[in-house]
Image 1 (cartoon, rainbow, N blue to C red):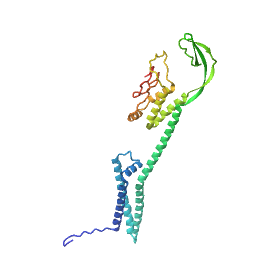
Image 2: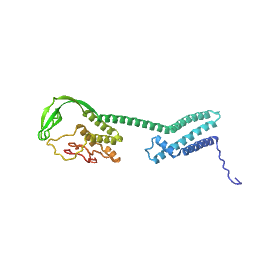
Image 3: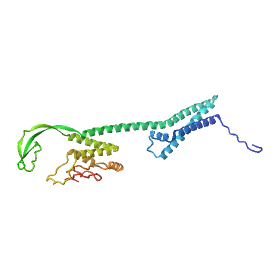
Image 4: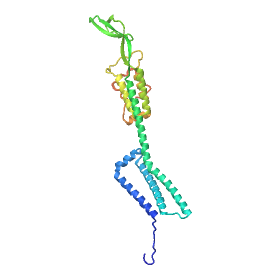
Length: 324
């Protein structure tokens, strides 16, 4: 400066200059790459690291902390590197000891920097492993559902004794040939009498395999307990099973028998499973605006006392003799 002024001299060493320029170059290059990727790429990276469940501001805070830690370690690494380069020789024992400490410091800082840089890739690998595990689990659940659905259609062949029976109608002078099972005696219509009865014969008939079907129903219940994601789908399967196996087309009121009847055991098992849903499962139904659909079914003598059917659709159902 002029006369009487003070002169301030700033000494910029090679260590300071080299470290600053290197870190600045890394920051500029990173900013350029960040801007070039665009917003969509950033969201994709966030998803790949498994952070999509966190709020945006939390992810932003974690990113700032990670970037600050990265820059600090980066500065430290290049500071030590340029410091070592600045020492061309170690004429004294003290300076040689300082150089060894600098090398140890560089080793530690490099290891820490590598850990910080690899953190996003570690998160990506963990998220990928988690997704692969979820995919495998979902595939296993789908296999269990398919196996159970096949069990719902199980049938078996049994031999029953049956015969043809000739019915005579005196007033109409007509003859009718009916079929009678030995374990289900034929109910004669009004004005009919038995004519000729054929011999009993073994006849192979196909009937529902109730044991296998009940096992399939309970297998579906177990799946709903393991996976809330598949709960609504399984409820739809069970409701469809009831509708297909207990159809009703006649809603004319009938006189109830003196003795209480019962619903077929597999249908009652399906009703029991539907009725004992957990509260968390009902919450899933409400979130998806799902209601149990049992319309158009003959549920006579069904037992509803052990379950919650408050939101079920029971339009056009026959409900004679039910227990509620």
